Amino acid sequence: MAAAPLSPPSSDDIFRYRYQHGTNLGSIFVLERWLTGSMYVDAIPGDAELDAINANLTTYGPDTTRAKWEAHWNNALSADDLNWLVNIAHANMLRLPIGWFTLGPAYCTGTAFDGAPAQVYVNAWAAVRTLVQRCHDVGIGVLIDLHALPGGANPDIHSGTSSGVAGLWENAANLNLASSCLVFIANEINTMPGVVGLQFCNEAVTGAAALGMFDWYGSTTWQVNQVNKTVPVYISDAWALGAAIPFMKNMNPTTAGALNPMIIDTHRYYCFSDADKALSPQQILATIPTELNEMDGMDGNVFNGGAACVLVGEYSCVLDPSTWAKTTTDQVTPLKQQFGTVQCQRWQSRAGGCSFWTYKMDWMDGGDWGFKQQTESGDIAAPPMMSLAVTDINARVSSADAQAQGLHDTALSGHTSYWNSTAPGQTFEFFRYDQGWWNGWSDARTFFLARTTGLVPGGGGGSGGVDKIGFLDLWVRKRMFETGNTQSQAGFGWEWEQGCRKGVGDFEGVVGV
Image (cartoon, rainbow, N blue to C red; front, side, top):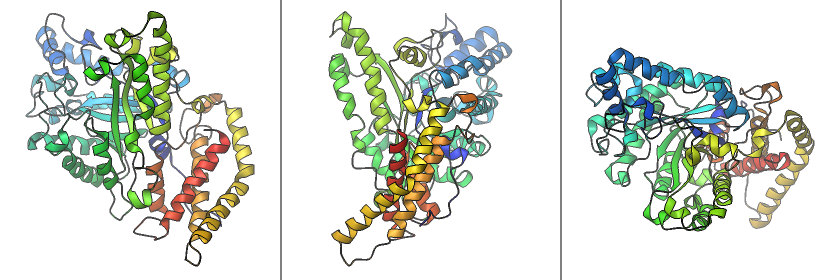
């Protein structure tokens, strides 16, 4: 039986659900002195965005300060940068940290940025929209990350101020303002092609779950859904992935009334904690293949358990000097290579994507913090599929097309014979597996060819590259709703899910991604 009538994946679908390989664009809309010290005034202390604004306002006045900030935003990505990201790094995503102040003076009222600082940001949101459009036009999606929230989701300077406290949580005014910011952005995203998602906050402080974090995530998702029902929402795990997964799964059910797809943003660093500093490079390397194992047994069964997907939103190739001191000098270069390679392998096999911290700094190419330096050294790399030549792409699809019917028949036969022998005499709806297989195969094929066919920019002129479904649980969930195979629609929807996953897997196996 042919697949049930189903609209093919859209351009937005490809941007949002494909495997994401990219980098952060830190210290552009949310400054950090260690990255872009040139935006600060040497004689005036303070490492946060507000410190830089106040120092410049005091030293140079409002007009010069605003012009300096606008130039920083508008020059963040040159045409050469975009070309490098697409053709050398093979990136298809940027994570873009912004602050509540980025939305302009109206959102600064009653906050630390009220008054003269707020006026610096009158054109900031327009600069974000322009940057997103320029990225879209070359095939790079953007995750808009509300990195700095009023009061601070964490006490660090990348929350916009040097307050040293996480004043967002348990503060109704700050939480309400943060939600209003996210609703505004979500509504704007309706007319911003290429936005892959909206992140509610960055690095929620350890213990935020006990401060009402999940309640706020839930209520804000509902508010976002009133203005934008499709954009994926990303949540910080507050450094506790295992505790966040059940909440995410409950927010990604296959029942009526489900809200926006939700993804956990989790960060992985190996240079900050005392425990990591006590380890050798080899010991740290040995831990990486088991990272994200909190996901084991939590994904792969959307029909019964809801969808579970993660993004490694920040990682680097930095180890503490005390770690490097535990090895010999001649081992440093090969160990650095292994460190980046093993991380990429793990993120590519277990997450829906990863974004390196970070791309731009005054001291390019950034050393072990630099996406450019680590990419050009070969320490980190995109999946090989992202640099496939067009001729190779077409040949692989032709081969797959010729094998499709046979693979389908083998899969369907295996499914029916298994259940007929396992549960003889019981009723099943094998047509759902049949349809699911074709739906999955067709969708995987569309993702694979999206650049070549022009469904998304970035594959023209023979530059090639392909995509695959990265957030598979959420894609399966989306298609379950669209085909009438959710738990609330069909008791045997699990057969459709198994067929869909098999169809995706069979296609990807044939084309080698």
